Image (cartoon, rainbow, N blue to C red; front, side):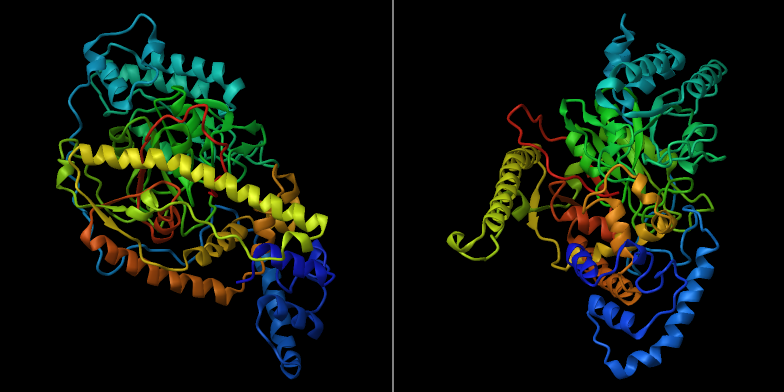
Length: 567
């Protein structure tokens, strides 16, 4: 598949401007001009498919018919909420999963409840959801008081951290009063009862705007609540804010600014679940919901020191959430403890009759399970292998022009920056392995199957371009905050030139990868890996879950962060 930058350069060099971007061949003069043999020749060069001159004429009638069909589909103005007829299924024929639901076994009442209520309620702002639940259940703290405390903290720290897009204060106080009334009447809804939470602002909430973090969508509203919002309402949880995400789920920059890491506000919180991770880490919500397509729970949880759970694909309904990639989008909790993620997942998983990708699988949390019984593998090379990044061959410095030398120096600087970042992180990763071993966890070295995983990323790009097709065709993509070579507007434009045949071929390669990775898991229940190792791409492509855990506090010696993940 043609490299994005190379493609754009080639495309521009052929004399075509941005007006041709809506489709590989079809949109010349807004799609009203007929396709010519010359256009076929140029498109074939871009697609790297040689078509001899004598065959181009025979293609004209068919291609022009295709162009008319595309225009008919455009007229439908398909909304982002409509999924394709094809549904990605990560469950292979050999896969077995639980379908029988059993009662949850949560941990015993935590010590925070035994200590009583502090004079200053903010002293419990960093408590786990399990701890806060016990304070509410025992009526030592009311949901209203907890909600007011977190609302005040959100207002206080938002000017510094930029993690709130919309406070849902009126709704929150109404739900909190309802939670307190229910509890007084003996109607306890479970461990999320009365707990304030935040939603990544790609989840629809009736009566409030759902901005997707993007310029041009600042006042967008939907009439219904997302399924996850409905389920957390039913669990008695209290939505206090719609939290920031990078524009259309990219990075940590949205139309209101850049969301910050509470532990180091000079640093972005990473993305795209930027506000969800930042607010949890800052003690401004009991928990939050984020989403991941390719790193958007994993990356900000790692940056901000949260515990994030990216569930198995097809476990949590995405109904009412912005679609980026129908075959890769997942919704999941960002919390302050592992058990918190289990409590939230228990409330939000399972079919809703609308998201056809969701399986009828059971999630059964048991806090008493002995983790030492697990067969644990770890990606030994990712924890121990020294950083290696080959330098591209080229002319000797003496033969370079000033511009070429400057470009080479910039490349060297970027490689060195990456090397410093990797080596700095490695000491924390090694410490995590040492801690697991000290806990008595037996770790077996292993490696993931070798596949061209990077070559499958265009699956995401193509689906995202389809999800925001009209944005690109109308030119409204210029309203998005970021317009660089790796940002969504450029990705959407370039993705229109990914051939349909190559999209299918990448999906076939994905099937092979799923089978190989599934086989690798036959010997292990859990695989331990650094967040930003190869596993991030592999598990997102194949549908496996990931639990992200903090592994140390980065101090002032930490190197600058590198570019964040998509989705």
